[in-house]
Image 1 (cartoon, rainbow, N blue to C red):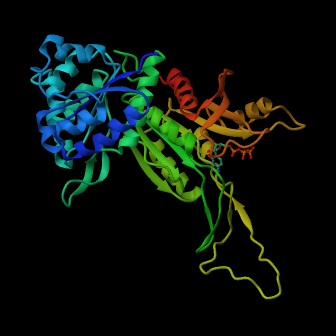
Image 2: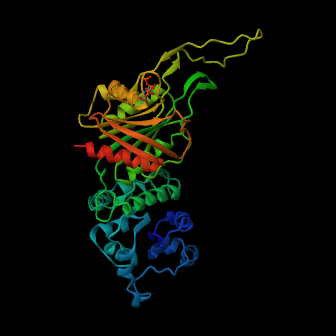
Image 3: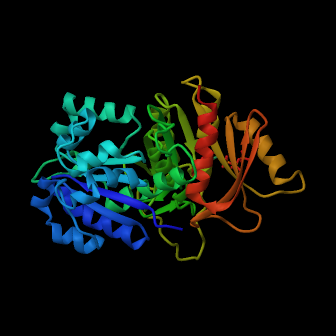
Length: 412
Ligand code: CTP
């Protein structure tokens, strides 16, 4: 198989240095990368760096190697064009079809998926001109990743940071994979979650026992993070509600951090008010100590152990499924099941789907061992309409896309 051809565009922002790391991720994972910087980008990172890291000559303008017609060929033959960082100026040019250098020519001739990772000061990102350009680009199927919030150049902080190169790489890989599979990242196809707000919960909640102890569980948050990444790569606005997860923030995703089931419930109810879909991939603790101690619980001299009284937590999935604030929103639950004397895994899962009242239930059979922390998963996606989709053993990202396929099919 030939290596996927990626054009890495770099426009003139201070974050250009981060594109070196992105470039390394592409080349080290077997992609054929041509770097196309703008003249302004070369003020930040010189051509020798790009040439050495990509193993190819680098030019910002159309007058080098003219006999190979690079201004047309690069775009035509690319499998993916990623621009990181994408400045306000670059996006303005792209939105208006200007083509005064090699990168803007490449964007005009590209027929493959295009991903832009903007980075700029908050004022520039929020300016109506930039907002309009981003909207235009998105309406044409370009995936414009939401910038991250945090420290900007100088002492400023706010929205406008380039997401971590590793996370931009994950989005790019996801888009490439879907394009190859003929999915919504396919050339010319609009991202099928564009204009949608989706909410994903991930991780395991912790219920406080005293200032240093909690009751928790082993959920890593990986499946929820894969769902958030996949939705962002399909163009959704994503709110990821993360309970005690130690993974990097997915690019272009709003992350809300919570600790307990009560905090998770508040965050889910707030986000669900505007959501087209809610996926409850988190493992909320079903019980919490009736009272948490303000001081550390001490050992006693006589060797006796304290007893802890628990009370039940609210069932968030059931609540949002049974009291729907947004009719038409698709609600998805997860279930880790083992079969028992009362029924098979699927019998019990069907009963749970009905009990909770959600639209889809993703069922993991955990009889043979836990899936916690693993990068793979296999599942059956049951629909309240009686449907059943078996997802064979594969990556959590592949399962995430299957789940979004089922959600998209049910969105009105
Ligand atoms: N869930 C929830 N709130 C809780 C517990 C679980 O929203 N307090 C959600 C999980 O995010 C997951 C699904 O419900 O989507 C899992 O079902 P769960 O209630 O954990 O299964 P069981 O505990 O096995 O259910 P039951 O005891 O009702 O059989």
